Length: 164
Image (cartoon, rainbow, N blue to C red; front, side):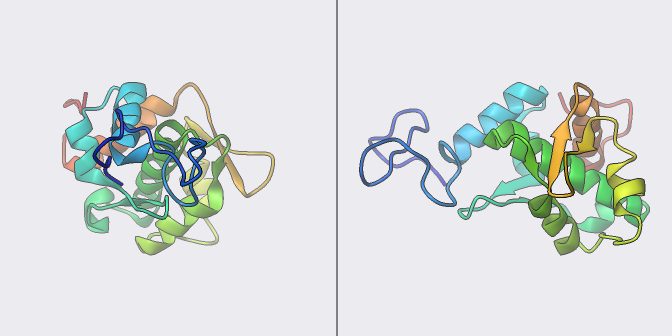
């Protein structure tokens, strides 16, 4: 959601003026989401906007065609997982990350493999782990390298090029 006239730097308030998060909206708007994610990841905001979209319902979607996210279903699922989980954690401040929301995007992109997702997709990432239960994903200190690799893959950069 874009800032409305009269709002300061992405600050949004509910109708009651308490400043609390309204249902489905990001904490402080789409611009703040991308700015925060760029700050936390070191990836250029323009690159993030080319790859991700924050919907008004608060969901994060990957806008790049699935075929451009990897050569195998497992690689595509890893890319989507890193992008969405990283964005939800660092852009929306979600801790732990809602694994159901991440899986929903992997399914929407057509690269979810029920039998192998936990081991070959999520389990293969160094910066993202299963949480206390299957409904949580937690980030480790290595999330940035997985996230930058996913952005590079989604934008068609070679491994040596940088999204930073």
